[in-house]
Image 1: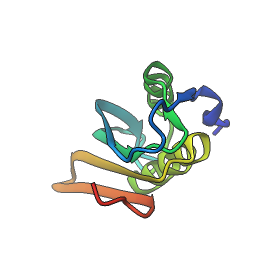
Image 2: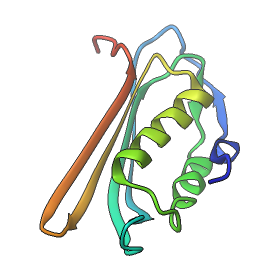
Image 3: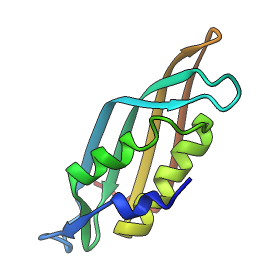
Length: 120
């Protein structure tokens, strides 16, 4: 996979001294099962407390869409998104949650985070 971080853009947080939650939800996330080649569908929720930078939404949309044809396991894609967003924003705290549709009778949710969540 190429360096997808290049797709992500950030902008200055106007209120870096204030802790507040930012929540973005992408309801139509798709990737490909690396074992079967079948499409995987899920909902990705990105929750973070910004420090100096916030994620720009159009770039986030393009970044998430870039996984459409990638063969990647649920666990890997959630941790990859976490690492990439953490790298470009350097937030105080960030959590990525993936809720994936049923495959083989199993419903999967994967959650990964970095940092210490402020008491908000």
